[in-house]
Structure formats: C-alpha cells, structure tokens
Image (cartoon, rainbow, N blue to C red; front, side, top):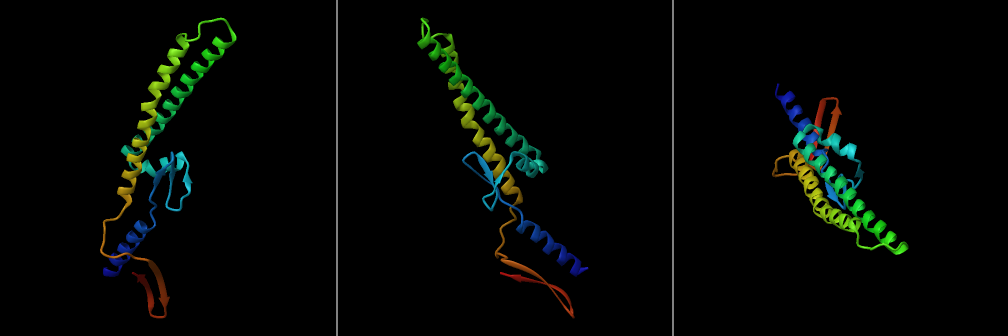
Amino acid sequence: MKSKLTTLFFLFLCSFAFSQQLTYKKGRVFNDNNVKLTNSQVKELLSDKPELLASYSAGQTKASVGGFLLGFGTGFVLVDLATGLSQDKVYPSALTFIGLASAAISIPVIIGHSKKINKAIDGYNEAISPNKVGFHIEKINILSNKNGIGMQLSF
C-alpha cells in the first residue's frame, strides 16, 4: 500500500513538473518554449476553468470591437477627407465627426483588452503552479534491474 501511494505521489509531482506556464507579450500568448499558441489552443487550456475562459474571451472580444471601431472611424475620416478634396463640399462634415468619435471610443476599449487577457493568463499560471517546496527536482529516472523497479530523483 505504501509503494502505491508513493508511486501515485511521484506521478502527481511529475504532472506538475511538465505543466506549461503561459506568458502574454505583444498581443500574443506564448508557452514555456516561446512557441506562439493559437486562440483555440489557449481556449482549450482554459476550458477547465470557466471564469478564466470567460475573461480571456472578453479580452479577445474587446480587442476585436476596439479594432473595428478604430478602423471604422479612420475610414470615415479618410473618406470624408477624400470627398472634401475632390469635390466642392465643405470638408469637416458629419462623417468626420462620427469617425473621430468612433476612433476616440476605440482607444479605451483597446487598452482594456490586455488587462482581461493578462488576468486570465495569470489565473491559469497560478492554478497550475505547485506549492513552493524546499527543493527543486531536476531529473526523474525510472530504473529497473534484477531486484525490481525504482525511481531516481536528482535534486
């Protein structure tokens, strides 16, 4: 019974050792090996924790809406500018003001999306990080010989 509990403990410890930490830099999510993860991969990792998944999805939605508003506003301003330069119309028309308002609204929306994504990533990293222990296991080997099977831990 003792050997089964010890083996179960070491397997549990190994699962924590191989879990990956996520980082969020420059609008992208990376794992420990600096490999960029797609949105579907991140959502799959966060699927166990619905509150973190909701925060990540809200951040992605805010980024999409903010980008749309910024593009929409910039487009309106440029279209009105081109119309004012090519035709005999008064340049600052309602399209310019609508475009500027849309671009101004998009700035706080875009700024807020990274906070929500960082909150989700930090929550995931806290959930998978094991409690701090007084030692660090560098290497685990499973050994077998004529006397039986064993595990070798290198600290």
